[in-house]
Length: 391
Image (tube, rainbow, N blue to C red):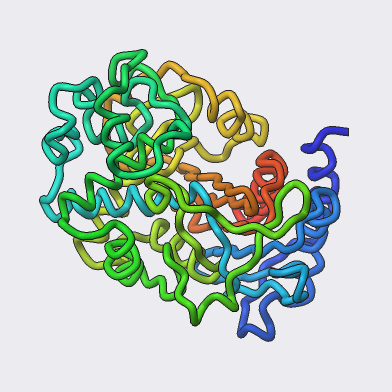
């Protein structure tokens, strides 16, 4: 039986009885009817994939719902809560994109700029042919998924980009890449003349209303930081790396992440210029099949069949270069659109998806990197049910 089949069967049962009731408090996180339905969706994931803990948050029409499963630490048996800190992996890229868009809203950068404007060492190099928009959308011309192992510091990083040779013209192909978005975020912080982590933690997060999200988890919060578990079920947390903060460095809670989703659903609730920054991340620039690449977020027409959403998040899309078609009309989508992003570290797995026009969204945080198809299948089913409740 495939991963999808194993997950869809319990999801089908959950949909039969799924209904929406308000959440009054932490003690009443999930009223009994919702709990029963969500249990049939998410508990099988813990058993099937040996996941110690999962935190799920949903929003529908401005009402939040929280569902917590398992433990944040197998050693201490500390339970998962809405305030447990998880590594969100590459979902961090959506914050990097928001920061870069914020820098643009402040007039510090333009997406049409080139890297050499901010890093003179790169002037005249192949990477300087790409724009900041290309960096933010993985279309610089063939940057690889990861830095080579011998790139261990900022000096190495700069030399890597200076010596890099492109395999395609900027904008011709999308190749998912940590160095690409990492450089995008690094340049944004250079333009704002501040440390990237400081900008995220002390400027961006507060403006988004996120009070318990970090790149550098403070000592006082370490007790809330879940342990991740690797394939051998050994406890693990993310290791430092070049441009790690910009690409996979955020740790957050279900409570904060659903607030971030709600900020994306209703950016008009934010003050300018952070409102313009959030709106800018939702513009689609390059089409690859049914998926359109935005800044951080990946866009799909909604409703969307599960198999198409899985295809857009497949290993082919993550690991291979895919030809692009430039979107001719650059504007925030006016038709119902699903925005999503997956994220993983060696010990954690995340998936976030939302539909602004329906005012629905779901966040899944887990302390094991279990298969992406299983995450997407579960969240897709919940979104479908939430959508059916909306007129």
